[in-house]
Structures are given as structure tokens and as C-alpha cells.
Length: 338
Ligand SMILES: [Zn+2]
Image (cartoon, rainbow, N blue to C red; front, side, top):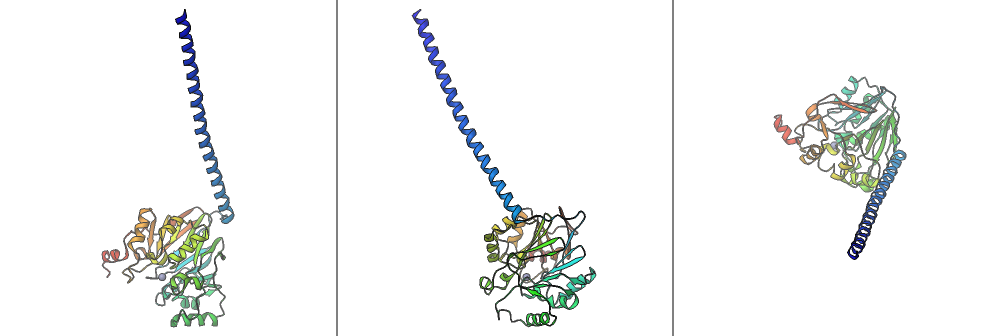
């Protein structure tokens, strides 16, 4: 009898112990669930905040059905010239060199251009602005954008002659500032990078005006020859840099497209305008490796000549096949150009 009582008491203790374990286990499960729930709530909140900033910062223009923005990367050898066309209106960013400016003029004539809403000279180097005099001699130009440079910094004859020509023709000139905006019908052009003469100093590439072109949900970053200091300033500005297309800065040189900047832009496509066998060895291996590793598709004038990009509000098409990831000297060797 006594044994039966003792056994009952032992069972009772065992039962209470089991219940205690169950309660402790439930308590820990609750703690884990609560931590997870709180982390989820925090993440949702952060996402909502980011979205909120994006909406305020970058309102997306509604593009009417069927409308497109055509971007022409004009082959002008070791230089830049990009023609934009939207709804029958045209704008130009960079104009080729003094010697290839005529090729740019011919290209524009073949497109039926008579008037340019704007001409941007990203910075006063021959391979970007050398062809501008030919352009303003051949087309009505409603607005010129060129960066302000320190007096006496640029003493080349062609630049002095160009400045005189702009003055004689009484063309409207604006020195772009960070945040300036202009448009080509439904395409918005926003200045997202522009160093002051004090910041740029003696490096003319760093006077480059960087423009983000937005068409619906599609964005293109036009960088001129902006080098790392300009990229750093853009990163510090907190402006949204994410773009579908990146015009690789400085013809794909390693002075531009720093890792942090490239990650921030995270482009699907990269454009490189350069001449085959150029003496600067553009584009460089380092930049192309970056593109290749990130599956960024590259289009280059040294491989494909003129490239036309058709951008709709939710799609991008190219009229050429993508290029290779070969650096300048390797491609030149392969094509037998020294
Ligand atoms: Zn250049």
C-alpha cells in the first residue's frame, strides 16, 4: 500500500516536471517568434521608408502608349556624340572631334535633323566639344549647355574659336549646376553630377556634366569623361543613380567606373564610345572585367559602329548585337589594327 502511495507521489512529481519543461519550451518558442516578428516589422518599415523616398525624389513620368526615346551612339572614333530623339524633337550630348564633327553633322542630316533643342558639351576636350562648331554651323541650336571653367584653363585655338562663334551667333548658353533639369518632350534630363571649378581644379575631365536621362521607368546615365572624384561627389549627394544604361565614363578607362559607383548604378547595359586601336588603350581590361562579372551587356562603337537604342517606357532594344569584353589593345590585335 505504502509502495503504491510512493509510486503515485513519484508519478505526480514526474508529471509536474514534464509540465514545467513544456512551459519553459513554450516560453522560449514565444521569445524566438517575437524576435522574428519584430525583425520583420522593422524590415517592412525600412522598405516602406525607402519606397517613400524614391517616390518623392523621383516621380516617374507617365509615357503615352507607343512612344519611344531613340538614342543614337554615333560612331565618331575616339570621341563621344549621342543624339536623342523623342516625338520628332532632337537633342545632342557631345559632338565628336574637330575632325569627326563632320561625320556627326552627316549623321544628323541623314536623320532629318534641322533643329536641336539642346546641345550639351560635357567638358572642353576636343573629343567631346571639338565638333561643336560644325554642329552649330549646320543646325538651329536652341540651348547650349557647357560647364563653367576657370578663366585661362583652356587655351586651345579651337575652344577660343568656338566660344567666339557661340557669342557671334547669340546662342543661349547655360552653365549646368547640380539638380538642373531640362527635357526633350517626355524625356527628362537631370544634372546629377557637376563639380565647381574649385572642386575640379586642373583635371578637365572632372568638369564633365553628368546627366541622368529618364524616360518612364527607364534611366540612362551620361557621364562624359567624369572620373572618380565626380563619382564620389555623386555618391555623397545621395541622388538616385540606379540606371538601366550606363555610358561608361572616359571611354571605359580605369580612371572612371569605380566599384562603388558601378554597384550603385547597377546597369543592365553599358555603352562605350571609342576608336579601334586608340593610343589610350581604351577601354581597359579592369572596366570590362567589372561588366563581364556583373553580366552587364556592353555595346561599343569600335566593334559595332553606330548603335541605335530604342527605349520605351518599359523596354530597351538595340539595333546591333552586343560587343565583347575584350580590352582595346586585344580587340585591335584581333582585328589586325595596330
Ligand atoms: Zn573623352
